[in-house]
Image (tube, rainbow, N blue to C red):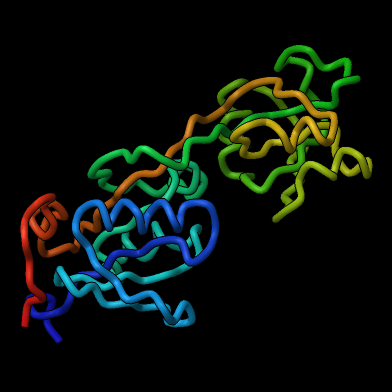
Length: 212
């Protein structure tokens, strides 16, 4: 099927903190979806010529960059970690968080210079590596997929680099932020292969029908 007649595709998080906010945002634009069967990874929109594709958060930029999806909603932190340059259509009023380096409350590390030679556990090794290079700091990066905070308690690392929103998880593990290396929020991105700009396809307070 040619791009001219293919339904447009929007990639969103399949599960996690951005999914519901993404659906609410699309609903505010007038998009109507039948999401009764959450097992379906592709859901058709009844009001626009658009399908929602539910995928892993970290895969969204790749789907959009390749043209497999025309648009996507993801966090700035994911774009930064993958080091993918995408066309950001607009920032969105949700998904606010920070990528921070945190150290134990009892640690002697007080400045970023004190990170020299230390072990830092993180689920964002790419972002951390680039920041350390910019700061001319040499530290051991320990990639971990989840539960990064516990790595210090288990003596796997001396510090962590992870996302935080309220700071409650850090506090629960007796960790305090040393420095913020990235401010993040949700963004709407568009593929270079998209045949139509997003807001030409969807405009608030206008009626649409599915293209045949």
